Image (cartoon, rainbow, N blue to C red; front, side, top):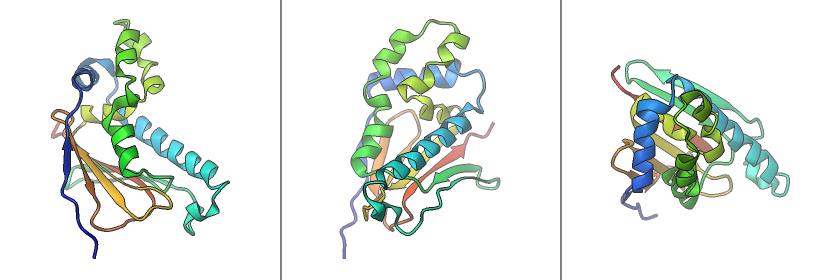
Length: 185
């Protein structure tokens, strides 16, 4: 029997809090950009698995048909974007989602000009696009299992106070599912 770990709560850096506030309140002109960002991330995860599986075919785990799925539950007010790409380990969940662009936040702020049209092109360059989800969601849950690993991980945040990382109680399929709990408006 495996030990179930309790959630690990981690806080956002001060820079991250500033960036989240900026993104939610002014940087993006179109709120639907969050969907493009999530699908782009899912596509990148599929491409990464395709590349890594060239050296280790076991990573396919008997599922070589790569997919990205967008689903919604109107009653629960959730939107989920999932993929069966490479997935993430615990450290990758913390490093890739918990820390915006691995310290790229400062460079992002330094690159801002104050002109929304010019600034919008910077999003993908610093890996901050994921955080556009907080324009439309008051809670985000990311569940991921890295190809070739047994444990899955759950990252959850309200976009304000920080985030938690918990080992998943059950092992799901390889890949990542991002569930947005949509704001009432």
